[in-house]
Image (cartoon, rainbow, N blue to C red; front, side):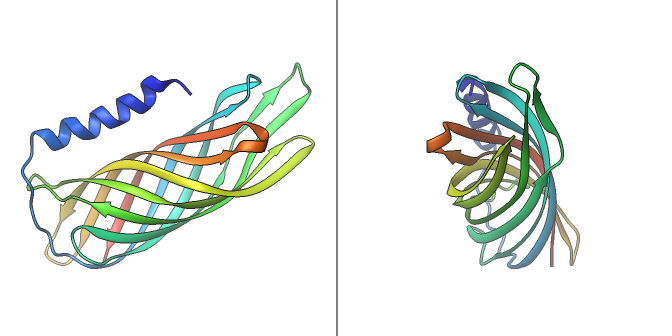
Length: 180
């Protein structure tokens, strides 16, 4: 993967956090969300392309700084490799994350995700499913009413690594969450 994408994601988070002051938002509770991502797949020297996926999430926020999140999703596009007569598809994926947050007074909250993801990848005719370390950074903005909190977020996530296949997946996505 082009290192400039990783650097760009980290710089965006740093840019937003540099201009804001820390804030304590003691909102705790359950949250539900949906997200969509541009999923950058790299498979050796054969594949360097983009798929798209969507997910639903559920989690719990213990305090302003720590939460957990589970996701289930599916890829909904594929990559055709005419020279090899193969099709690459991303199937279902399941993930669980520990989420470390740092709320800012401006309504922005940068966060880190660390966890595991199980993904199904099919490179016709071979299909594999594997669990790997998954980690990423994100930035959310909270729209807060008296009893409802809606978060809009951007994130960069290393979603899947399969060493035997030299396969690596990075997701760059948007999400919306509802906390109750």
